Image 1 (cartoon, rainbow, N blue to C red):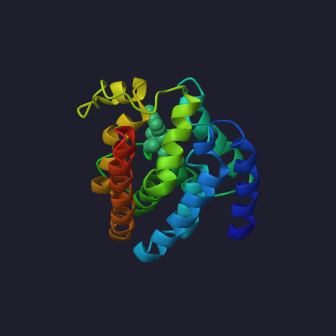
Image 2 (cartoon, rainbow, N blue to C red; image 1 turned 90 degrees about the vertical axis):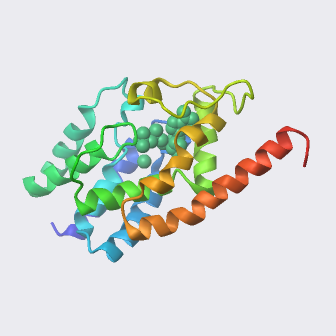
Length: 215
Ligand code: ADP
Ligand code: NI
């Protein structure tokens, strides 16, 4: 089976798998990440096949929706790609990326260029107008308050605290979204992040104005 056919099969499979979860973690998120990742990959000379497979699989069986079980995703990747006779070496590279992409995980010392690309693309989707929409969508799914002036953001969270955090969605902007710009791996990722970061800042200014009845 050629690579294009494999990608099409993976798309079909992941689309079905993504029917679970909230609307910020749906198939359209995966498609956006895939498109952004391909764009960045071309500038960074990354392996497009590995980038695309990893982008498509990156949120499969997200541990937030599997009671923290992190063994499900690599099993699914291995089973599905194995059934399409994809090389074991490529499957390992894809699983390495799927396992290390998340903000909440410890970062590996050495990142492959393909991991850098897909991680940037995933992070970009948590920024800008889409990032705002996804944050409130997630907050609603988790029944969180949008904002509480009494609750200050926790900027020095440990990874455990971050995962367990039940704070307001506005605090999430300070605890994660506004930090992403400086975590970009690639030159192209940084460039795209600047614009989306500025939008987040502008959004917050207007949010607080409206909250305080000043706009
Ligand atoms: P990662 O896979 O890097 O840990 P997540 O899956 O936590 O990222 O984030 C997916 C989306 O859900 C992002 O748009 C993120 O901003 C949003 N999100 C995650 N946690 C929260 C939260 N506590 N409040 C609001 N939005 C959140
Ligand atoms: Ni994602």
